[in-house]
Image (cartoon, rainbow, N blue to C red; front, top):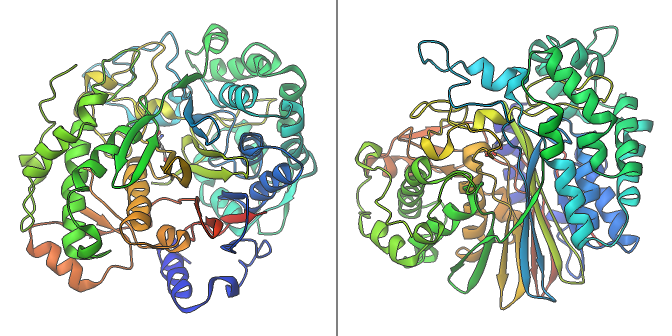
Length: 572
Ligand code: DON
């Protein structure tokens, strides 16, 4: 079944069936929807086995950060299309007790040998293949450094302990779900071109994967064991580093051992904003997610979205007008703050939002060509994965990490058993030329040695009266920001429970192309009304996969996104 049809069917089921009675997905037993009241801790991930790993860590006395790190390593084993140690991401951590919200930036960096025109030919044309599927498509991976930093600063268990479940899954193997089989079978043509990848991820007899077959990864198990025993520097300076550089250099890559050795995750203050009675904490640059989610919410705050109604032409029009203005600013002002002075305060200020809101007519769409980045006075086959964890001590974690595309560059590290990212495509290969997600950029996001490429990943924690309230985020490339925005608005403006909030049909406007992209599930009447206001509306495949948690007086509730059939919310 296509992803869209399966979404439509699942949404229909959700509307017709009490949640607790929903039939389990076909492959792994029914641990998918657990919105039971009274639970005091919750794990929601895109894979049942990873959710179990997190729940077991919590049950064994670990805190939410211990569970989040264990999940990060487990997803690298059970969901190699996006779970990774060869990529990077962002983790937002909220501690109610100390009233602190912090974040770990473990985004990849450009190697020291990178330069602005490295993905252009002699005539200055962008070579997409180079930034997506070559050895130079990979940034220096950050996941191992980021996970270790989170654990050391905010966890309570040893690295050895939290990595044990991932090592077991890699060594013993696990029964693959249909989604896993479909992913590898469907990417055969691209991935088999790489001899090492073919050997690791495909069967020796060349037959397709079938759900239920057992997938083992002994080389990855050995790599994870070395990291668990020797610590994260093993990845950056030990045997794993040797394997990584040997593989990339054999493919003509520029990354060196010094690049790996120099890599450091960074702890950063998240972007903070307010929306109605809530505090929003989301990822700061080099992600654009936090800035733009706060910017869009600021633009929406003075309108009555509740009265307009979810999925009405009025609310979709207003939201898409706000979205496209934020994405226009993204193209000019967002990049790695170590290289470019990102005007975070100005972009997230209520005054600037009022200015932008004043340009929006409630009757008529503004053509995107009439919109550009504001004047700030300075002072598809894609896969990423988001998961959320919250415990009863007041710790909550929102984590999004990725290889960029499904299976990243498609190049696996020989003798170490893991895939490398193709995050270099998130840089602007040339000003004005869109990347794989149709996003354009300029100087702020040009390739530079050691620089972090701009991201849209938006792990977010919403607090109310000092308490963790909503833990959310999503994959989806450029659609991540609007997917996360939708979940926040569904909960705050439309009073949805968390399962409805993540299941509800989504829409997205990123300024260019000039269109509102919608999922299946909106009424044709709404679409006609939007078109009559001047919007181009295109229905495309499902967007995002938001694994979210809501905490209120009823306890901890998990919303597992039905757009991934392995999504799983597990409570304690
Ligand atoms: O960092 C980013 O914004 C992208 N590399 C994320 C890619 C992604 O979400 C692919 N997924 N669905």
